[in-house]
Image (tube, rainbow, N blue to C red; front, side, top):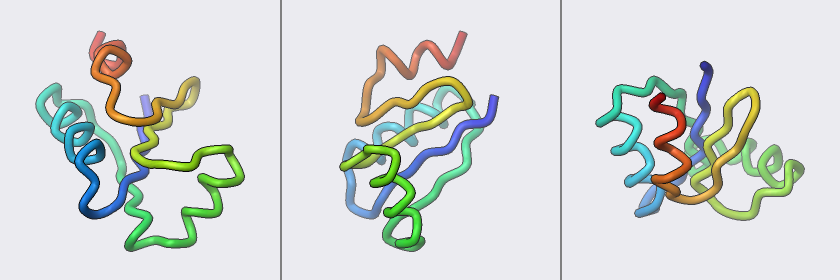
Length: 74
């Protein structure tokens, strides 16, 4: 499963999401919107207004949602 995490600097929910993924050894690619501002338009056009946004082929998780993230583990 390919996972992309959109994040930004100094974002506590982003840090918690990354920690959860690391602790559960879930590989992901990260797009930091502070370092790649062009990604902001992609998020806005998809209807997202805040980060973190975690996307897979079939789903998106907005914010730090441990109960939804746990579904990625199984």
